[in-house]
Amino acid sequence: MVTLSGLLSGRGFVWGRSVLSLMLREMATSYGRSPGGYLWAIAEPVGGLALMTIVFSFVLRTPPLGSNFALFYATGFLPFTYYASLTSKLGQAIRYSKPLLAYPTVSYFDAILSRFLLNTITTLVVFVIVMSGIIALYDLNVSLNIPAILESFGMAGAIALGVGTLNCYLFSVAPVWERVWSILNRPMFILSGIFFLLETTPEPFRSMLWFNPLVHVIAKMREGFYSTYDARLASPLYAYSVALVCLFFGMLLLTRHHRMLLNEGA
Image (cartoon, rainbow, N blue to C red; front, side, top):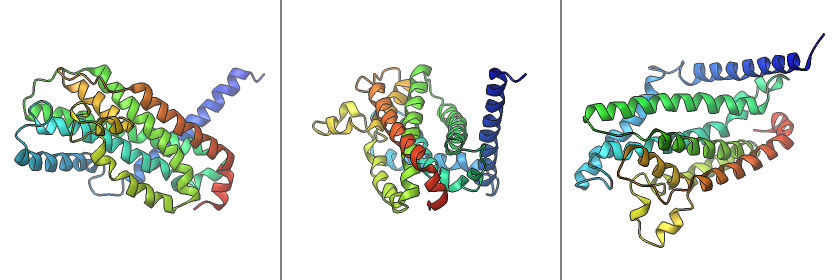
């Protein structure tokens, strides 16, 4: 006799297998075809951080927080690249997995979730390697605030998931939006707090920058690495609210129009 729990467990197995299959496909196409594979995931942020450290160490005597340039910029650069990369990849999820979405067991949500999980796991591994390398290389005495670090990653992941899901619909119905989004997102690299602290920014710029949710993400990350820094202006509630609003509208639009996107989308 077939039971409800059996049906649920069977559906859960099929769903989990679909997500895992999409993750393995993503791993093979993103990292398996390029020389070095996963090494590029580490080399790219290391190269960017090294360039920023060298340039700003000549211009400034000390970073805005602490005494080590590499640590300061890493605590801003790595969360930002996680967000920027993930929003772009999630925006392309339907287009990338379109041939597989023809199967009834694979949904657009599976495509989004698989990309989210794979890129989040990859980012966490790269983050641990890079930050451990910086601390060991410069022999830094760092007292880690693990809850603050995890909260920062939680906010960054939630914002990227929300914005990326909304972009998944917009990239499909209006391909030009992908280029527009890329242009609009470039100033965020400067306005998200990678190079400065929100608390030391003069008004009225401080109040305007506060509405950028990535400022809150980076502030929390720095609180996790600097025991003397209190991210008193950071608001996880605001960051999660932005993420939930974007996720709600993204899921609503995809649920209503995903069949049209599969048949007629770009």
